[in-house]
Amino acid sequence: MGQERGGAVAVGRPTAKGTPLNFGDGAAFRLKSGRELARALLVLRLCAFPRLVRHAGTILATSRKILGSRLWGGLLRATFYGQFVGGETPAEVTAAAGRLRAVGLRPMLAVPTEEDVGQEKDGEEWYEANRGAALDCVGLAAATGPHPMMQLKVTALMSARLCETVSRRLAEPEPELTLERVTAVMGGEDAAFPCLTPEENRHLGVSLRRLDDVAGVRRGGAWPRCPGRGPHPPIGAVGNGGRDVFFLAQHAATRGVRVLVDAEQSYVNPALSLATLALMARHNRASPWVWNTYQAYLQDGKRRLAGDAEAARRRGVCFGVKLVRGAYLELERRRAREGGIPEPVHPDLDATHRSYGECLELALGLAARDGEGVGVMVATHNEVSVLHATQRMEELGIPRQGGGVCFGQLLGMCDHVSLALGEAGYIVYKSVPYGGAEATLPYLARRAQENQGVLQAARRERRLLARELRRRLLRRP
Image (cartoon, rainbow, N blue to C red; front, side):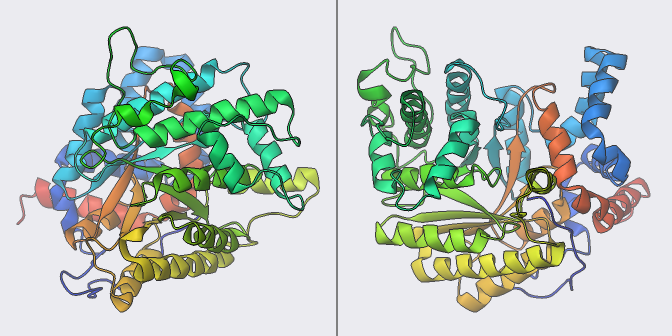
């Protein structure tokens, strides 16, 4: 949801039959506690300083050394961590989800773990541990209330280096790694692709089954604790690569957790999309349980979205789309500059905005055509994009509830947009990362840098927060 700035929009205009959508009156902030208002105002004012955001990682790490873990953790929880993270324990995450639902929003849980090329781990232990964390996330999401969602990072379960290799192989004429063959490997067949080494084939097979386990169990909550077995049996411990997932997922109809697979860097995305389409082929027969993420800041974003939608249609499976602008802008440009290759991203912000609008038009058109067979999340903090989406929903006849379209923003950001959408009857999810303060430190720093344009331009939100605090202090109606 990065690389965007909130623009001024006309407010108080009806966007569909029902409550008008209004980002400017701040009435939705009456749903927040005074403590939440004060913390949000403090954090957003601090985030308005570019240098603070740019060097967030260094500042957080240095302050921890100076203050010590206990004091540093307490200050972080009272400010940035408390604003942008759902908590560390299941009880804290459940409480955060409850607070969101109390104001008409829905939680979308996320374990902020991923890997980049050059950060590979030896063996399978780290990836297996992440599989356990992802399965825990499924169970936790299922317990947060109806219509749960969770986010999943492929590179938490599969080597980023292998993802890069697979992505390169997919660019070759007549690639061996077809959707049908990858889907078969995900279902238990051996991976034996001549274009990969024996070790790469082994890791690919294990990783695809890891992904499938998370997507498969997503309908039944969490692995039950059977006698003599821990909560997360290792791949290969029970016949056919752990394929008793569906035996254990007996409550599919009542505990559905939709899995939204995140996009990452452009040089691994083709492999990520291939794996996600294979998950769709296995699990999206009746409903879009698995969704893919498309980044509008990439020059091939619309083409990839259209191509994947057509691939899903040909195979008769439901299709899920989370549409973002993109979160790795500086990394993509630096890598292109250092490698002497063309930049994969659009040249400027205006081009990215146009691309987002075109991708949004395509995705909403799919939702209008196929109804609940297509799921769309308009994941943006940009007020212009949000308002445009609501207007197009009305014009295309897509209802606010039950039409397959929802909105998404990060926890702690653009709450005036999220709350106004919720009050107007739209479905809104807040991305809720969780984990310990130290574990989420890299996430907090990167999220701040990705969204520094939004944070620095959040004048309206800061003004509305300050106005609501003054109203309460002066006891005005």
